[in-house]
Figure: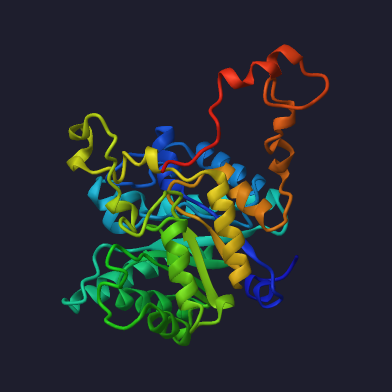
Length: 360
């Protein structure tokens, strides 16, 4: 479809949001866990462009400029604050190159939790506002289609971001991060009430991102959708198997880890989460459920890879470019059923696979 982001949403189009850049770049060796500053934008822009390209080929309708944690607080932490504006503008330029190669794909500017906002210290309102104004201002000058403000855990901080985007004249997709408590850090009301406040004040879409995987993100969405139009909700979940007992990925505990003392602080989060990785099928199922619920904007956050995004696109009936390489087990040398495969390999299958079963 063509038209602006808001026009396409109003027409009923669904958008798949492919991101998860921080964890993917850390896995590839281009970003340090802990600080999670997107220095790779400046140091290796070709790697960022390649990841954007992979995600779009797999079905992402959006190229989100890699500016998460590309704000003043994080760059100051690593002594590269002087590169703040360059990083933000370069990130949008990188994203635009990919958008230009794929007509119909949208360009999003990004901002996020400032880590400076404190609801008990009114002086931090101005600090957070200034940080949002910098990133949103540069994004507006670079001509993005809309802003994604993600991983906020304070309603007060979200309201500042909304006002900044309203003043800049840019549509806003807002994502709250819901930790183990199931609530926002500065608001005693329900999540549905917080979402309504954000929509009333000008956010175009509002919902939840990060921290929760499909199994614990979807119940939040289903509950909120009882009170808020699901077409105004959004989500991009982490690709990890969170549970009712461990609802956010910061709470995941790997009981099978043979030497837990090797984990920083003894925690699986954030660099020992590998055993909890969702399959592409789980992410595809999440996309299908979100779509059936009525959401028109959903995708993946931390831990998401291009193969997850492809599964999400295919789950809602799409055939992205990368579907050319979707699994075709009929051609597997032993598991396949293609008549050209050798019988002695197919006959050997029982020797190396287990019977499908569930524990207990």
